[in-house]
Length: 138
Image (cartoon, rainbow, N blue to C red):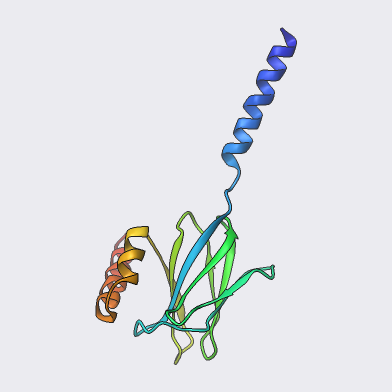
């Protein structure tokens, strides 16, 4: 009986450990300036490691593997470096101000990301402005 209790306790502990373990995943970034112009050649690097990526001509990049809590450093010549803390979201839009050096990031849902990727520059600005105004009301 004692062995069964110990075995049960072991499996409960193992199940709890597995439930709390963070899953490494791929995270998608779109880097642009405040005019919604994609920034090709922006650098993204997982802080404290050599893991990184460079945005393509559309301002898109992926980094893998990352987990929640990791910090991704986004830099571009002429702009202030931005640090993005990874949450449960998989898609991030990072906006860098080339002239003043200010920056911020906006987590997007997968639907918003797909809509954003397939939209015109005017619609991209509309999506971002709605996301910003919605976030500030909460």
